[in-house]
Amino acid sequence: MTSPDPTTLDAGRLTRAQRASLPLASDVAHALAEQHGVCVRPLAMRRIDTTTGRVEVVPVPCGSTREDQCPPCAEKARRLRMVQCRQGWHLEAEPVTHRATPSEDHTALMATRADLLTAYAQRREAGDETSCEQIAESVADLDTELRALGVRGRLTPLDPPPRSVKRSTRRRQDAPDLPRRPVEHRTLGRVFAGRYRPSTFLTLTLDSYGRVDSDGAAVDPDRYDYRRAARDAIHFPALLDRFWQNTRRCVGWEVQYFGTVEPQKRGAPHFHAAIRGAIPRAELRAVTAATYHQVWWPAHDQLRYEGERLPVWDTRAKAFTDPDTGQPLPTFDQACEELTEPAHVVRFGEQVHLKGILGGTEEAGRHIGYLTKYLTKSVGQAAGLTDTATDRQRDHVHRLHAEFQVTPCSPRCPVWLLYGIQPHGARHSMTPGHCKGKAHKPEHLGIAGRRVLVSRKWSNKTLDVPLCSTSTRIAQRRVPAGQSPVGSASGSGGHLTWLVGFEAATCE
Image (cartoon, rainbow, N blue to C red; front, side, top):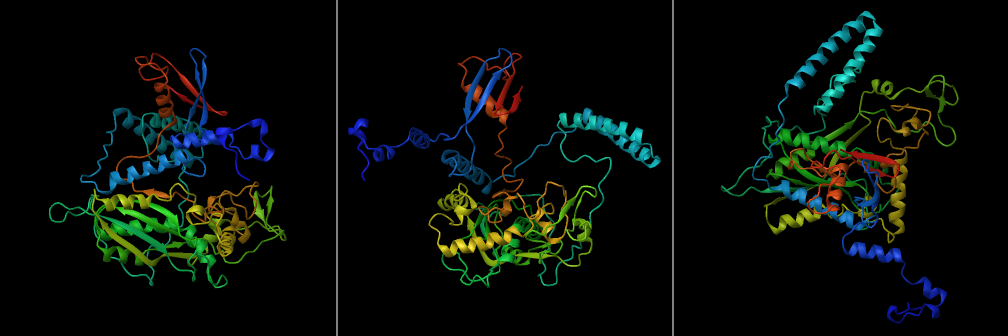
């Protein structure tokens, strides 16, 4: 059946099927918004002037990074990432961070806090709990004042936590050694021929787990190592951190990078990175081959509880217990004390792609586009798991997801209860084997962390936009020229309150 021609539309003579084929008003609004690059699902914020009591509803963009949720906002976020990558890839000068000098107020408050810490330790040793509580209240007030003055970083706690078990940092015997140079405080690479300062494009992959076809599905699912694939995917971020640490120690300067984590067709993550400066190929390949990450977790190879036989929460012991004996399960830390070898070791695969790129060239722009190509798609969509996926692909993903369901993602994961171990922060609301972490969801394929990784000294610019800054810009756009919006810096004693649903954000 053909759709009616909108130019000769006669609503009274249309059949029910023809009327059902006509576009909805919401679809037309979405199409128009996408055509003009406007958010298709704006967030309604209530703007309240607490001086006059006037209430106004102002729409703001949702800020989604997924094109299946909001294509205009996702494309805007992708282009911002492209700008961020371009700004730091081929810098010609060091990005300098100017840190404020501590004032007299800072030092005076810190000195008072140090005296209180000493007094607290003495009173704690003497068993004077009343004085300890008073000192703790004073220290809490000082901490609030220090934060209000702009002091950041970790403040020494009154009661230091127990020292964690330290594992040996000695390298494995089956891993090649790496040269170590003193790390210079610079982020720029070498200059060649007096004027060329190339940078590097790098691609890292994980090892092979078995043969796959052109669609990424396992040729022989029974011989494909799904367990190792799931564990490697979950611990892939830690492996990347170790890689950059080894790279800086090997090359001898503070290597900076802009990278994205994307899935391959087989479902395993791989990493693309734009590295500032030129690094010899031999050194990068040697670092990749020698990098590994040891997972010092309790063994989780054999399930102890499954089906309806699961650990039970004991309200008196405040712990999970064995359903048969009633004995409390060992905690995560207790299980780690008995370890003599890591539960898993993650390594990169043999495929390493390296390429030198000059700034300002067409090739640099093409690689930036390639870096950010899949940022608007979900992990599953980027891996090709769409409606057109084959049955072999779906079966491959189902097997991989089944392994993610029984692979702990962190020391706090409730999956540990299936192996007879109480995770950190165990509580009665936990359901053994059911974790809400992203690593266990089928659309994430074990990639639970951030997909865009940017080093600290990349460009000294971030994408963080506070809610108050957004609200101020909206208010400034809605007032006539020459007038100051209520609550702005140039206003006189104004005050704005923005309400999002039942949550309030106040800008003064």
